[in-house]
Length: 544
Image 1 (cartoon, one colour):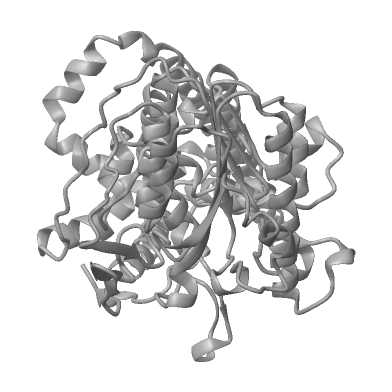
Image 2 (cartoon, rainbow, N blue to C red):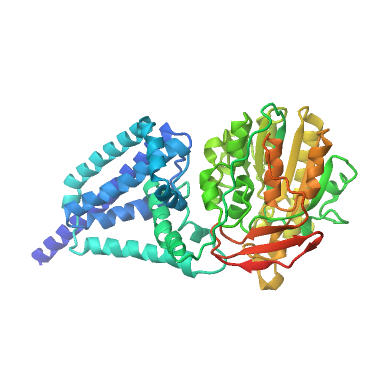
């Protein structure tokens, strides 16, 4: 009996060492990212307990049961190299490595080496952090891992777990058709509350198991990457405000005898106020906002996004505009979108979680106007993007009680009518600088049509969205461009022209418009609409 108890005590002791090792392992990795975040403002450290315990500590537990020390050390090196590459990438680009960049690196290997050979100083801080972390891991390996529970097939178990993850990526990117949900998107895109090494491996997995199979089988279509627009007016001095709505469909927010838009309808007689229907660039927020910010004209736009030469924030900064992105979305909802909008070129990026630092938030979209006033954003050479929470589900949480008059979704539209009206009036009364204010919804929403709810579906209720403009400009030629705008791509070009660039301001009525469905890579297909004069063809669904 004593022998049995002795053996149980030994096993329990070994298990406790494994748990202790797992926590220390996760702590070392977390402190790495924390240390780097202090040296680089673009690297956001927002770990959750789930990331720490369910991901990093769990990985540490798997590693602790591997009996071969050489295997454990190799794993340390791979993890630290992944973080090192992410840090260096942040030093230069200010964002995570995306899957498409593995392909671009392969095609531009020599050019990339030449660029980084002249900037070796950017590796010093990342290298120092990684070396210290490696020493720390070797220390806890020697004094803790050697005393933990071991299983002769420990390495095999870890490899099987990684294979399972890769199978999920392969399924999502090669076999799954239809809507790419937020949780599935996190399998293939880096996000801001994930460890740097995990983001590297997520992008690498997507490249190997998602991007390459399509490329090798020639199942992807090659669309051109738009050239960087040329700067033609360095002396431009105006304020450009883009308000991005959320899930608000055109028919719900029309200005034709609509009970939901009484205040905006009162502006219809104002010669500086304009309104129409346009086509969204995509049927999900991450897709449509990325389309708007990066001037995407064609499907399969990740190479253009990665290049950043058409990113509105970057182009604005290069012409000496101050840049702002203020969102009523939480950091959680922005985690995938963050790297898709060249964050390095945003002077001030504020999400809903940060509002209380600056104001006493009321919890609704009117907080955005309060922040505009707080930051004194008018009367400067500025490019400002405000992102609504708008009509996102659950609808009842998006408006104050006094707007509870109709269905919950309709109430969100009624509230948006008021918040936009207040913003327009504030600009009208306080802007001495030439100002252009745009509002466009990212996409619409199904409310039971076709037996479906929500977005991510390539149907008109989702891709037809409202677009309005208010301006105090005296330039009639610039104002005239509004009537030619038909989609998000046109809005991007409109904004580019206001930022001082030569843009693709299309006036030809004969054209083809592309609408991505639920993802940026075309897994769920994309729509094509041919326009001939005033006749628009029925949308055609295509797949890569």
